[in-house]
Image (cartoon, rainbow, N blue to C red; front, side, top):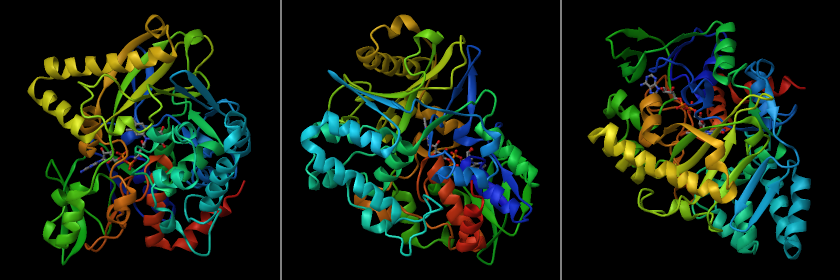
Length: 493
Ligand SMILES: Cc1cc2nc3c(=O)[nH]c(=O)nc-3n(C[C@H](O)[C@H](O)[C@H](O)COP(=O)(O)OP(=O)(O)OC[C@H]3O[C@@H](n4cnc5c(N)ncnc54)[C@H](O)[C@@H]3O)c2cc1C
């Protein structure tokens, strides 16, 4: 079997197939494996790119089942965030602390919003109902009928239906940068999965000693898998409408009875003979909308000054938690809307690696890409400086001394992500599944080309957890869903 791409979804499919006794080769175009799991060094400090926090990794929680089955749980040093406050939400004039656990958070909300106890209770009972009625997010929950499609209404409509105040809505929906959709666009399904996942428990990975990408590679190799880097797949080789191999940009041809592609789905129109797909499918791929990309600032803090040592933070510059989705041009607008702040686990006495992130729309990224092409050292660099200043100005509202405490050691934009992982439009989460176009944006793992399959964050859900589920879904097609899910749950705690 050939797998194109060594991100979390490619590696998940690779480990499962290797465990099933297949001969697996992962082909990665970049010189470093891992896709969005990669880390990098600046000023002698390690920084993450696309993994800052993981949820539900306590024994018996949803992601822990998958990590255990992939043989990576015991290879990772996980550092739990502060149970009493794993994320702090800063609004103008008011800060909220979010504790882990459904009940502690519910109690905290009751204290802060005593007149809205009814709406808060409804929110949590709906959360539990949805989680209990959907398949695959939690492998230990297998409902008789998967009701996912019943929960594709928008969060904006949902909040209206349970009559929450604007202030409470802002707090409940403040984690939206983690799934990248406005409340008008985001489905109940997506919001409640993410809310549940991180409320159960939230962790950082000690990437210095146990990198996530490294743990996956070690597991993959221990099951006999092989990986080649600097291996850009240019074409799928087909015969009689079936995949029989791939050719690389250096002209090498590699043959195999199955090919799995984990990059951005729209790229398959370049890789595969397009006539093998129906025109309607080609159109759906070409018109699929991407999530926003991310602009990042890597910061170095003295340990004592680090503002997010044991919790993450969202810093909003207004109570409008959707404003950043409607911004026209980040280079011209006064505000960023929101900045997400996170850190790698800190070692006592050592400086802390902190990352500040803000969303950049597809259109804003188009401008940055243009500047990058025209003059990388001038226009593009100046644009990056402008955005960095806006991010730091935003952070000053929550952390007034930040300019004295933090050293800016690197900045990056969605253009950077496009270059290193071939992520179309530099999008952080791939194709978005909005409430109004949910079905249109969902793609099946099997394609019209026999033996050619898709996986990755764009196929079903994004994030590390969602991308794993994409590959579990794909492998269910190959090996049988009940068989696979039973094996995953069998690895109990
Ligand atoms: C800034 C940022 C922060 C994030 N933070 C979090 C977080 O804290 N927690 C979380 O759960 N999720 C987070 N995410 C989302 C998460 O990183 C992604 O959803 C997930 O890593 C996607 O994995 P993937 O395997 O689908 O794609 P990728 O990681 O992009 O892997 C695809 C791989 O395929 C390779 N490839 C593509 N085309 C070819 C080709 N033709 N030939 C060979 N190789 C090819 C690419 O180089 C790449 O390595 C974040 C994302 C971003 C951008």
